[in-house]
Image (cartoon, one colour):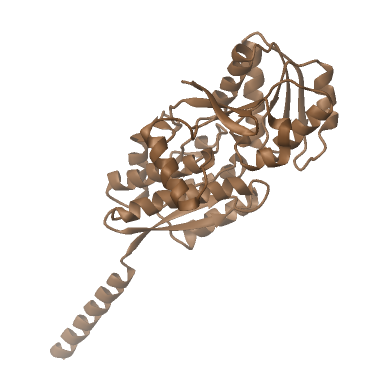
Length: 375
């Protein structure tokens, strides 16, 4: 009986060891989220490419914590409900260690509470609405926030373009667009400018002439449009059709190769705040642009750059934490002090990066670096 008992115990121990070995992870899963389809599909495509490049580069150097990184990328379709679904799947089914995503503020605000509740660290590459990181201490971002971006746009319009009267048009169903519009208006008026019209439009609108007619009645010297590129291009075309020849200023949502395809000549003399310029001469930018072009045969936009940066920030934090434990990664993220493509990154107490912004001009159908604005 003693021998039998020992045999049972030995068998149980062996089984436990086998199960333990089977459960030991051989890779680290990194979640990625972006709108690969839907109204901002080019944003999702750039995000996926930039993040994939970062993961590939880490894996080529041995991965992180001695393991290869597996990117599990989900399409949120630019829809908050879908975003909540894919965040839940990544955490509960795919068992990701951390998440890089997502792009649109309205979708990030749906996914962030899920990551926070599960204590899974996440960093949004491009969600600029200030409410995003207010969700909790596991939520970070790689981009500057709307108050800064809106204020930069206001300063540029007032000081560089010498505009004293502005009209504002924005998507009332988009947290990003509303945040930018509000902060532009506040900043422009604080500088002494006059906002002659502040016009919202419903999401999905394609005819903006009613709003633009009200704006143009006030004879603005600049129009601020805080929408995404597809709406921005249509608004620019319709503003030109109504006779407006002046400058149009916007946020980083303008940054898409499709902007000129949709807007044509109408988007010339337009400007937008952005996170980096591909024609900048820093070593980090040159290395990134070269690597991205070699892999995808195209020039990376700011969405790709920020996803690449966000991926590197997250993987660097995992390496620094020397752990896949969420709390340890969160603490390592908070202590980030890193040079990335879009500049040097440290986080403030609200987990927002302290960094500069650039102004991009659309000139002869091409994006041209105009100037840099420091925080």
